[in-house]
Amino acid sequence: MKTRKERFTEWLLAGISTLSILSMAGIVLFLLLDGLPFFKFYPLTDFLFGVNWYPTDDPMEFGILPLIVGSLTVMTLATVIAVPLGVATAIYLSEVAKPGMRRIVKPFVELLAALPSVVIGFFGMVVVAPFLQDYLGASTGLNLLNAGLMLAFMSVPIICSVAEDAIYSVPRELREASLSLGATKWETLIHVVLPAASSGIGTAVMLGMSRSIGETMVVLMVAGGAAVIPTSLFDSVRPIPASIAAEMAEAPFHSEHYYALFATGIVLIIFTLIFNATAFRIAEKRNSGIGC
Amino acid sequence: MKIKSIVLSAVLALCAASPAAAAESVTINGSTTVLPIIQKASEHFMASYPDISIVLSGGGSGTGLKSLLDGITDVAMSSRDVKSSETKLAADKKMELTRTVIAVDALVPIVNPKNPVKDLSIDQLRDIFSGKITNWKEVGGTDNTIVVVNRDNSSGTYECWKELVMKDAKVMPKALTQASNGGVAQNVATNPNAIGYIGMGYLNDNVKGLTIGGIQATSETALAKKWPLSRELYLFTNGKPAGNTAKFMDFMLDPQLGQQDVLKAGYIPLAK
Image (cartoon, rainbow over all chains, first blue to last red; front, side, top):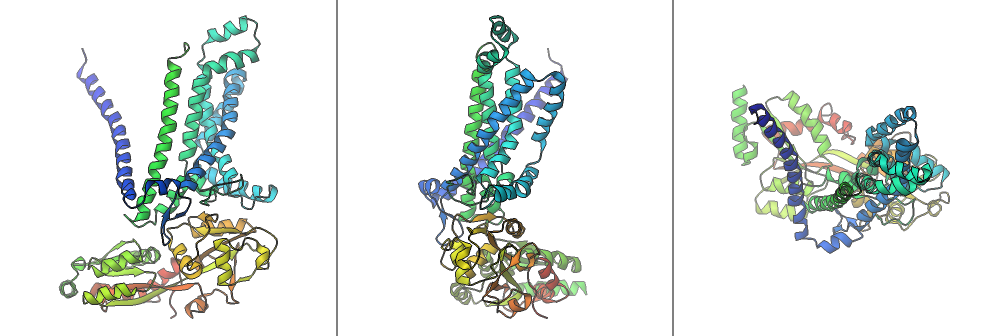
């Protein structure tokens, strides 16, 4: 028998969670409403596979392949850098560090997550970019490598904390069984703990990727903004969010350019949805997996 | 007095046959290049004339002129002159597009102060931006790859550069993109091989403005139309401005009032 108060609270909480679903649905709806009209006058294949992005020239060209490739390469680079760092930090924190050390290191990792992206972008612009120009001979420091490094900075804390949870939640019995069979601590870690936590680590990686493909400020500031398919680490790229952020403010309302930017937004949201859904699937598998 | 002016403006509004001007408002629409000037000036104007409100929106020069011809705006902001098609449309509608120059916009190509290159021609600038010239030694500089810094596609500055420098050529996709004048200046200031362009109001000591064919970019050369990268910015009205619109136009052209806002927005005020 529920009291009135309990029922009221239930309804209130249900209402609040519906609100977040509704706002998500509303955002997607408006994105579709403003993005889909674009395909009435521009073919989808030319949009997705065109290599020239000249939205305000005559004739207008809206090929976003360089933007998609830019987004994916920056994300891949960031992931390649961030995953070993994030997972290694997670292993250190959960398996190796003494409690005192853990109390010092963990807040710092979390603090990294709290750094505003504009600060990281600024760091990339005034510290990393001149370094790449002066010491590594890059023609411009605002490039793929710089953006990848800065995005890796941003995804390390996410990967680390999710992976740490996963490693931490591997049951004690598994480790103890392994150790009692004569395995060393290192062998236990490599052959027992990490495989058992692998789906959790997979989720961490996916969330990190989703974070870096959607990040806007950092890539706007340090990726350089050249709409070309990169051929080296020192080439500038223009990831999708940077393009939208740079051009949206002055694109005339309901012009072709305006619709094209919304259509680009749809492509971006499809990417993030894929990564988040994959992360979700991996997490589900983990819950039904070995006794975790 | 106040009643009289309300009646007067109502009558004028009827005469002008523009329903948007009814009561005490002036509608302004058009170029996003001119927008920052009018934004500043209209705030300033409304502070002096609290009974007149200015309804301001952007959308591009073409949109502004079209709304003026459709009678849904009183004033059109434009960064270009009217096209023959627009003049013809106005004649068909028995309207007369009246042009008022309110400011001059000048772009300056900039390089890093360490770069020995001081002067380039318009053709050289076009070849650099379109990717035909890729090394500074081809234009008398050091043996280094040129890093081209462009503005985002939707900015009025890019539009102006395209019109005055690029003509039919396209800026190469490899060019870096910055979303603001400040961003371009910062980028050029930190890269010895970079070249970019900014509004004259944004020049600072960290970058070097190039001369074009020996002419230096100054307010004087821009106003005398000697500087090749300058253009006039206009407000268009239907016939001679009257009523509140006239008040606003007078305000805009006053060297102590509207022209100060032109300066604040980073453009060149008209000669006194």
